[in-house]
Image 1 (cartoon, protein in one colour):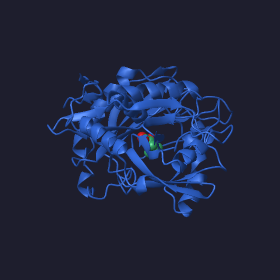
Image 2 (cartoon, helix red, strand yellow):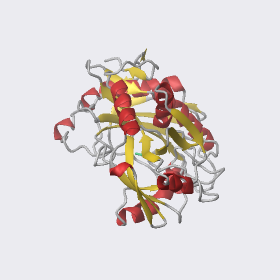
Image 3 (tube, protein in one colour):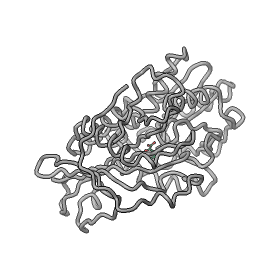
Length: 362
Ligand code: COI
């Protein structure tokens, strides 16, 4: 168990917006807590961070990020556990990934201990915003962007890191009900040597048109194939993807650099190994998935991600060929993974991995 000390300057909001929250209709990322953490990188160094009331932000029209997209972000969650303590799930992983994304986007790294301190203290200040129901959480969204003003194409001199909190329910309105996914054979999200492994705005912008077209056809999400051959499975965009083929849990390997290294992906692989499930990280052709289905060996498909945790996939459609997986019901592996992860996050199951960071109260 890890507990982080607090010593960031805090300016409290004059009044709270919490009275207006409808806790039964949170959705995802629609409601924001009273405070944010803000820190600036100026003249080659990070200044002291501070916690201030959530408010509008003044920017100039020439702020480089608006033009050239030098933006990275993270997503992690805080929970009340069954003993009334506040848990954050694997924030060290997000700190590392933020810095890996920063390196790819030519941005400064933010010290890991300061990241953990900022998150911990912000969550402590806005602890009343952590929902108490199982399946809900306080979603924490760090975002870092270039804040200098210019029009030449080069990296920013100055940067801003902001951390926002949002009480959320399930990412998908249907919760653990299986989603239907259109396999994109027209568009690609990332290419080898591109930005796919970074959590950067551009990857999400690249996904919007395909997502809109998939929604218009009645699908919940798009499954991306690799940008070189359009043959191998990459990821869904809002989550990584896993297949249970025969008795093996298979997920695309990260070694092509086009897939986001998901924290939940890594968590599921670690848990699966402990539970004695055979796991394999390798390249998977979409044709292999369909062949496995034909042979009756495609037992389950599910997505993994911080926002969704585990999201079963009930239908896949590739070039008009639709397959239904596990009778369009959540399968045993997906269900077990969801229960195990939520159990650890909520303190119902012992955290034998040191994945939980406790938030000290202020
Ligand atoms: C997450 O799972 O945290 C994500 O970032 C996915 C999405 C909401 C962008």
